[in-house]
Image 1 (cartoon, chains in turn green, yellow):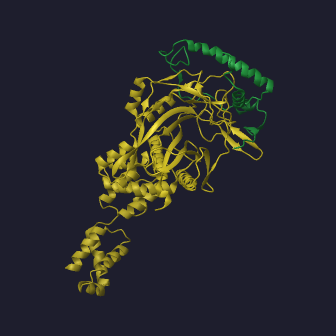
Image 2: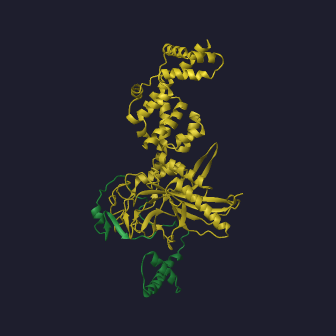
Image 3: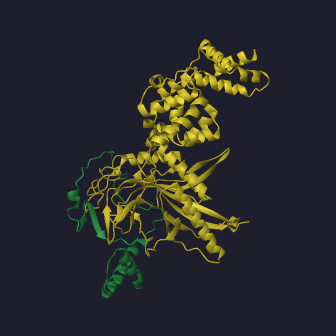
Amino acid sequence: MNRSKIGREQVRHVARLARLELSAEEEERLEHDLSAILDYVDKLNELDTSAVEPTAQVGESGTPMRDDEVTNEPAPEAVLANAPAREGTLFKVPKIIE
Amino acid sequence: MARSDAYEAVIGLEVHAQLLTRSKIFCGCPNAFGAAPNHNVCPVCMGMPGVLPVFNRRVLELAIRVALATHSQIAPRSVFARKNYFYPDLPKGYQISQYEQPFCTGGYIELPNGGSSPRKIRLTRIHIEEDAGKNIHASGYSLVDLNRAGTPLLEIVSEPDLRSPEEAVAYLKELRAILRYLEVCDGNMEEGSFRCDANVSVRRRGESRLGVKTEIKNLNSFKFVEKALRHEIERQIEVLEAGGTITQETHLFDPERGITKPMRSKEYAHDYRYFPEPDLPPLEVPPSLIEAIKAQSPEVPSARRARYAQQYGLSSYEIEVLTQERDIGDYFEALVNHGVDRKMAANWTMTEVLRAVNESALPLSRAVPPAAETAALLKMVAGNEISLNGAKTAFAAMCKTGQSAVEAVNALGLTQVSDEAQIAEVCEQVLRAEADKVKEYRAGRQKLFGFFVGQVMKAMKGKANPKIVNEVLKRKLDS
């Protein structure tokens, strides 16, 4: 298949959702690459999966569980050690507009 | 006809309820309100690279309780999903939630409806998810506290079955009562452990299609829910009447001005790109666990209301007051179990007990004496040892000082005089002193009887048994 599955607008949309800033060249390259990836994945459609349950994971089934116990001590200094900015023990971040 | 009568509102509610667990949903940090900022956090709930979530068993148990109480169908297998968006209070860049395969579906809640049969409000779904942290907006910058990040939540979504702001509030109150009865959530709206978003649209009466809806956020009290919905319904009707159309958007309620206003639209806000959480295998619920929890689940409000009507023959008003909180009904029943007459127990709980709770602003268990002591006091009334008013005075003292019934009655000198000879003597003195009035009474001024009773009570400092005073006076005056 040589028709682009992913258009330029979609590349921009996804980049924006992922907070990525792309140059025009990068946009063009990604449009091409992402389309190629989708073409490749399309191969799977050659198989008849109508009788197969949708599967997101293989391997162990059932979420492992822990008991409801507090095991962590407060460690605010460790928590904030890598923060670019702080105020008291709060993280300081650029103003959030609504 | 007011033009708003031509329209009907259609409301669906989404409630987020924080679960009363000791630790967070995916890590061993404390699940507690009010700690110093970022003191209840660890690499897992901060979203550090390489960490893995481990699910808290208690969350599942509490979720099963709610599913059972709301007649929902629990999925034998539900799937955690990532909801992706960027916001400073969401350190991982996604919230672990459930999407296509939620924990349970298809339940309902019954709203008490006076004497008529209860209104059934259907639930679309209930799913399990984690809470985000908290942003604090300062001038020029913002601050982030992640203590709340990873707090276990149930999101309970109703069908658009509610038809008025009042009904929406009734639904919320009932849901909150259920969660509190089940000891699943403390229901504290101010602290945000019980939060509500509303979807609302209007349509002409008789129309079966739904209108375009708006979503209202930031509703942190019952009063605000009602005000915000009323305002939004009015606003939508005005727009439609003026020939306009409703835009699907999210509004924030401004409690100070009592209005809703659109949030600055986040262009991509609803593109969450959900996908199954790779770090957590599907949640499987063994039927044996459901059975075990069913066996030990506390009574829900609707069951208690039905039982109170049948077992105690209480009026619907009495039932409503006594079942609004579990501890109120528990106290009433404890009084009855200690031998207090059911009417007396109901009245006392509804008036004196609730007054003490309201005045002290303490939880019931700390605001009033143990039920056994209150029962002892009320038995003194039944045995004519003290008057009803005396019991009220004693009860107020017991609440404040922690005295026993006997101590309070003695300390306040409330013991009632029921000795007939002693009362007769006082009556004799009063009638002699008021000889003129006695003549008038005997001449037909029956109204004066109350005056004599008052004089006797006054002479005996209010401690005489009023029933005996009445009898003795009647006998003496009419003889």
